[in-house]
Amino acid sequence: MSSDSILANDLVPGLASHPGRLLKEELDAREMKQIDLAKELGIAKNVMSDIINGKRNLTPELAVRLENAFGIKAEFWMKYQVAYEIDKIRIKNRKAVEKAKISEKAKKQLASI
Image (tube, rainbow, N blue to C red; front, side, top):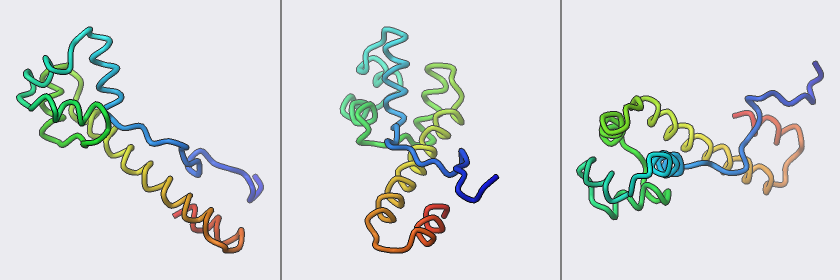
């Protein structure tokens, strides 16, 4: 394998997908309204809207409530949240490296951090 090969771990997503998007898909699949889920979870409807629209992150407490509501493990929701946060950082780092005026070798080293 040459040093110019790209590994799956080296790929940086173009867009980070917030867990609210997945939550919205789950609501749609169950033909459930946001306000009904908000009531079931014991949260305000504006909090639910913020989560769905990617303006508020999932917390472990909310993940457990989602587990109880949907039967989907809290760990699944939290893994999705963590993956979103990591993707945001990778995208930010990639953009900073692309913007920086440094050698290609240094860019590759920074991109792998």
